[in-house]
Amino acid sequence: MNTTPSKTTDLSKTASPADDPGKSTTDAAVTEDPTATAAPSEATDEAEDDDLEPGDLEPDPFTEARHGVGAGATAVVSAALGIVALTGAWSGRIAAERETLMGQIQTAGGSSAAQQISEIYGDAWHTTALVNGVFAVLALLLGALVLSSPSFGSAAPRPQPAWIRAVALAGIALGTLGVLISAGMYFDLFLSLPVAGTPAG
Image 1: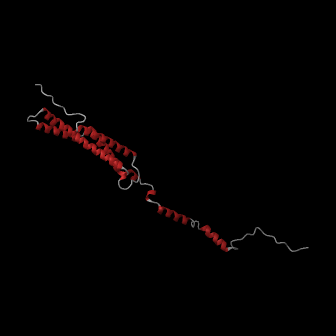
Image 2: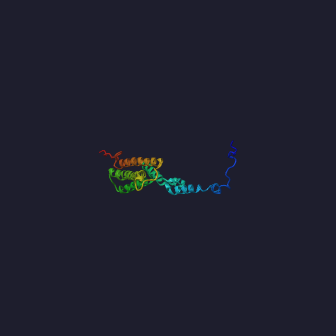
Image 3: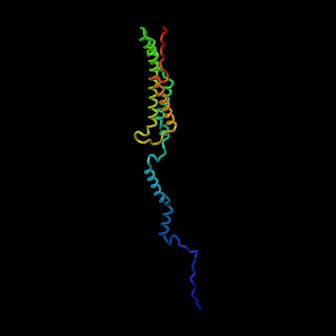
């Protein structure tokens, strides 16, 4: 009969920090330094910020507001000049009155009816057409400049707003129409000068 006592394991006995001092020191270091793993992530974020280009950042609202101001103003001026070319300008009226006065002075000494019509009426009519044509050409050129401005020099950072292109197109249309009407007036294509009748004899 075996009287040797059997070996039993006491599960309640676990390793204490005193039994394993190296392990306890490592656990304490890991527990007490929670920022050790946060430092690499912060360095990564700073590196990503350095790699960002100026275009990747949020645009400045003041820069956005200033974008297209010059092109928009030019387009509005083009449309306004086109309207002036069709309705007539005070400068054209003054020039026509001057030509009328000069014609009256030149025919005061006695001249034929045809010469009086040409000097007093015809020259004033042609001067008005010429002044309106100048305004029409300016409207046409400014509108074309606004539409073709992105093709000159460096490419535009962003496309032009739709309203700027619409107003520029209106200026081109009005300028083209003004040029055609002014050319017809100057060369007497629409209305010819009055012709004096032959006196009855």
